[in-house]
Length: 449
Ligand SMILES: *Cc1c(COP(=O)(O)O)cnc(C)c1O
Image (cartoon, rainbow, N blue to C red; front, side):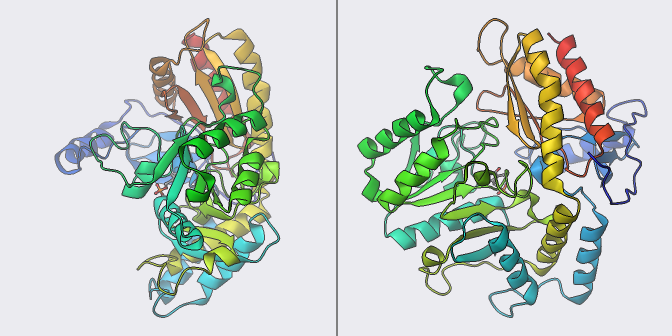
């Protein structure tokens, strides 16, 4: 992995200054507890002062290695100079006009770029919004208009957001839905392909797809379904990669039934998995794709891209929003995508993948609590279990994440059973830093085994 062409402002080094969290973070935590809603929680007890490349600096001068990218957002780093310059230049001209009132070129230019990067040779249309949830909501609205149907199908372990419609699409009850219903009607949940936890370990991706299809046929009926939405690699649900053949078969069946196949690439898009979009690993061409997170170097932006014949079925004024495709966020996205191309971030993700498996697969043989090791590109995961079986071990997972943090490594957990450590490093991270983080992680896993 070549070091990135970007000059880092902050030395790419881990550094712990003593008490952790330090006094300034502790003081902020005390203020926070008196003013911020208890419903908003944070993984880390430290407050950020600065961030660049693979390093986050806290208010007490600790330097942490970032293995989370603010949940797959800062793919090009949290302050890439090209993104910062694009934002500065745009903000000196105009921060907002509202694309629905007085449009601007950046929105069109970014849409053209995304249509070019998204899978499929068909004519495409694009629309921009602010958050991943909003992109998902709009994809569903489009699918309903285009098909004249209302049912929406989502999978076990799915995560699609926290707004009312998307929390209904999300599988996990606590904390995402607990006490917050009713959720939207006409949402159906069907079985996912989860190779590590299949009752029949030999079930193929195609067979798992047939199981899902049978469920849809029996419980809903293909002709009632407007959309099937799926993350090509599931994110919050546990970084689950469906068995090979699963996605293509579901997409094929959707086509046969006139169902809009929506790939939710909010987490897996923009070089994260070593391709522009995770759908590309199996040559799947979604009818609509949602995107957000990694798209704009940290600025809030989301969008949908899809078949022109589907997106253009929506009447004028049917899609939009005050801030959707904000000019500053759009400028950041154009710069971030340029960085991804110039710095070869797909290739960097693939190099990280190789290092991860070279390190973790031997460990899996050695340590019984390392149940499964999986992922693509720099969307990588370790599933922890009780020794000797497959019973999820959320406590151990939490302990490993906490021990890593105490060593100055920011690591996130996920999974329906809370027993998955996930790695989502910024792709501009230096080789040395990535290796150091893996070394610490492996040591922590060994110590806890
Ligand atoms: C994060 C995420 C969302 C929701 O995005 P927000 O910007 O948090 O609303 C939707 N789908 C997937 C796959 C995600 O990972």
